[in-house]
Image (cartoon, rainbow, N blue to C red):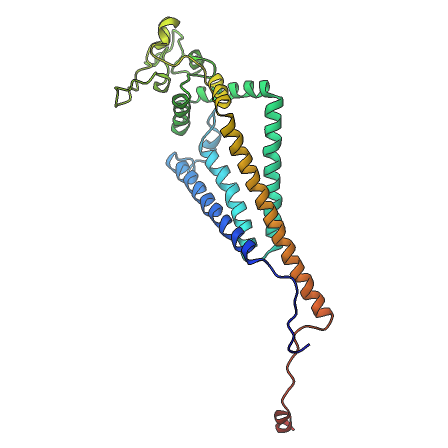
Length: 292
C-alpha cells in the first residue's frame, strides 16, 4: 500500500475547538467565583475558624458563589481538557454531569409547578430564617436589603415578620433602638433623596397600620415575588428554555466528539490488525554490503 493514503474517520476540529473555547470561559468564570467566595470568607474570618460556617441561622450568600463556581469549574475543566486532549473519559464525564444538571433542573421545575403551595410555605420559612439572622452576617444583610428594595416588599408576608428578629421585635424588654422598626430597605423611596436614610424604618411598626403604608412597603416579599413571576413569565420561560437548549447542545457536541474519537481509534486499530500500519523502511543494499 506504499504511495496510497488510508482514508478513515477524522476528528472534527470545529467541534473540538468549539467545545474547548466554550468550556475554557466556564472554567475561568468558575475559578473567579470560587476565588470571590474564598476572599469573602477570609474577610469574615471563616477560613481561620472553619466551625463558624455553621454558626449562621440563615443562608450565607457566599455559598452560592462557592457551589456555582465549583460546578462551573468542574464542568469547564472536564470539557476543556477532554476536548483538547481528545480524552473520551473526561468528555463522557462532562456530558453525563451536564445531563444530570439538566435532569435536576427539569425535575425541580415540574415539582415547583405541582407543589407550588408547598414551595410557597418553604419560601416563607426560608425568608423568616434569614430575617432572624439578618444582623449576623453582612452578606446576608445585603442580600435581604437588595431583595426588599428590588421587589418593594417587607418581610415574607408583611412588615410584622420582622418581629422574628431580636433587634426589631416589639417586646417590652427589647433594649434595641431598632425596636418596632424595619430595615431601611423596607422604606418607600423618595426620588428627591440622594443619600439613603438608614434610620427611616425606626419605630414605624409602632404606628397604626393605616399610617405605615405612607413610610414603608407593607406588601410581603413572597406575594411580590409571585407577582413578578407572573409579570415576567415570558422572560423567565425564555431564560430557562435557552439554558436547557444550551445544555442539550453541549451534550450533543460532546457525544459527537466522543464518537469521532472512538471511530478514529477503532479505524487505527483495524489498520494495525490488517497489517496496514507504518512499515520500517528496508536497509539500502550498499549499506548492507558495507556491514558484510
